[in-house]
Amino acid sequence: MKLAAFCDEDTAIGLQLSGIKTAFIPKNNLLELWHEITQNKDIGILFITEKIAEELEKELKEFRILNSLPIIVEIPDKYGRKPNHVDYVNHLIKKAVGIEVKK
Amino acid sequence: MSEQVIEGVNPTRMELLDIRKKLQLAEKGHKLLEEKRDALVERFFTVIDTRNQLSSDSDYDFRDAFTSLIQAQMILGENKVENISKLSKDIGEVTFETDNIMGVKIPKMQTDSLHDKLNHTYGFFETCSALDDSQVKFSALVKKLIKLADLEGGIQSLALEIEKTKRRVNVLENTLIPRLHATRRYIEMQLEEREREDFFRRKRIKAIMEAKKA
Image 1 (cartoon, each protein chain N blue to C red):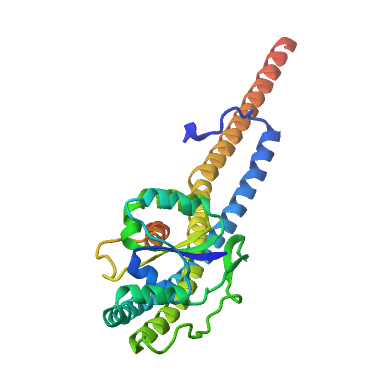
Image 2: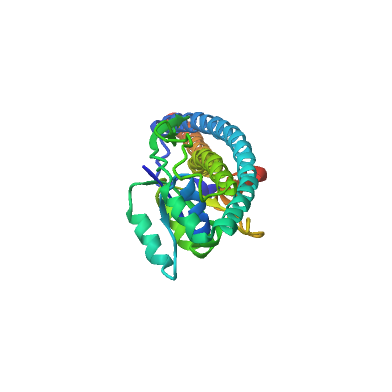
């Protein structure tokens, strides 16, 4: 399965340098591209920048519950990580461990 | 307590035996599930540790790699860097297998088919060392990111399984087992009551018969 990136232009160039050729760069058509990605069953890992992840929060959440592939990894863009962004994996950990703490 | 009795049970001896068997099974299951949950959580914590380490590592690398990339863009111009980036060799594909940890299916990545050796695909004339740097850094970064993806995939399935197991343990602990206990008590009490009634009835009949004889 392929590796793909859903990110801004600069990140795409960086990832392209290292050989990740499938890049989706949104220009006002975020949702369309997202649907295109979800239709594509050949993507194994999707790298998504936090900025886009934040905009697509709801769709991402739904998609992740229903599908285990592609694995979606949130990456920072050239401005670094967002300060108040809770990524999905941390959210999962909190959910799983939080119940544990209560026990 | 009385409202927790399972509805529609006849207070008979057969039913009591049945409920006792069920209770035994439920308690056994509860113990097993509890063990499973603890094992999963333990495993989860080790995975989380490595994941967090890798994640903060890759964050740092990202900053580094972007600095190089931006330098290259400043020296060569954005268009040129973009064109060169298209020349690089495709990284290849990953395949997924499922790994099994205590009944949890976890996607396991096979990265053998990835080309992670760097071979330069662009000329040294007209490019600069910052571009080389950024390519090297991004390639190292992508390797880490792929490992990270592998871990995160595992975390996702583990977390879901932990939640599921927890829910099961809680249902057994808080609903099913108390209910079975209550039902057992109810049947036992009913049976005892019936026995007492029976006993009294027999005494009564005996008394009446003796009164008739006399």
